[in-house]
Image (cartoon, rainbow, N blue to C red; front, side, top):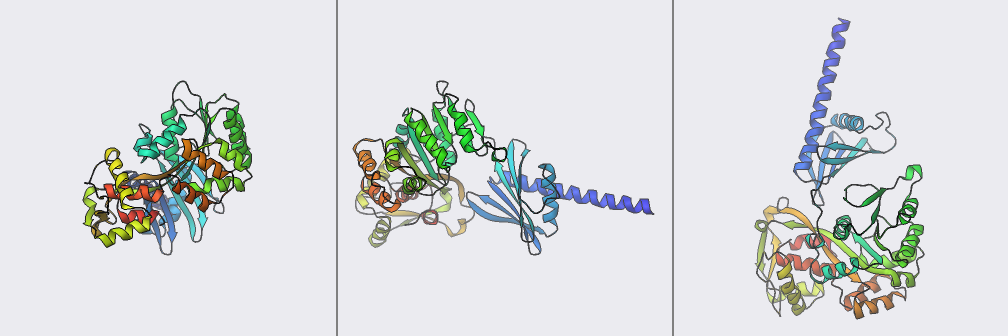
Length: 424
């Protein structure tokens, strides 16, 4: 009886474990098939909520019974080599599923523990700058900057890592010694020397940067520039003839220089060593069938032009240029007097009409002729972010919202998506 009872308990436990494994693998497979970047498994009152982040938006995918949460937590802890008994502190590890690498983060929350899975897919090839949303003058300015032998390229905003790797991809030749300093290496770059920092054992961004400088580099990429000592090393390296690519944890290009000044960097050093500032955000791209192209009246056109602070003739010139470089999905939507048509999302396509994402950009160059000389001199006066933004726009920088409006006119995305991501 006793033995038989234990056998039944063992059998039941084995069945539960198989069901948990099946549920976990199904979640991962569905996430990969749906091109999710993140998976959230959350304990809720009476249920376990499953959400996927797809094209930047969290979507509810499923709700499982409440008991699934601790079972899935235990399962992911086991396969990730984490401490199953630890429930008071967050834990992070990495697992593999086929060619995908998955970063597992488990953190205590009210009601249990929350699992977040970061889906890192293996890429067969890296994208080029003209494949991530850069075009026209912005593309020219970025390529001009990365061809310089020295200086600092700052990147900010959603999607900046994709931009950084596109830059590295274009710079990566046998003649260049490229060293990267990364919080976590999530993408391998053949031919590039990648360094992962390990703060827990004292190998911080500062030590990694010092190590990189001892490796006779031509180009150094730093994925999160926040330590004032590392910033100073980066500036010193740029002054000694190195090209530095650095990401900053801020959203807007106009805030880069004030942010660095707040960390003690002088306006003179920033003006003298900054090559270009690349600001961006990501917008979801739409399937052509998901859009309705509506005709605008003169009054409606004027309202949009006023909101975007641009004249009809200026947006028409930009759209004509974009027609040559951005996939011509539509006929020209502007003329010299007004915006004639506009792409909006069909009401039935709010969830399913998006097929990917692309970057929209604003690029501030400090090395491109007379315009840049004016900006460099203006930076010396230590202006704030809004002053830099206004001055840059008056001196030829294409605002991010205008780049986004061009994408709407060309049919890459819908006006609703642009309004979601850009403040007017």
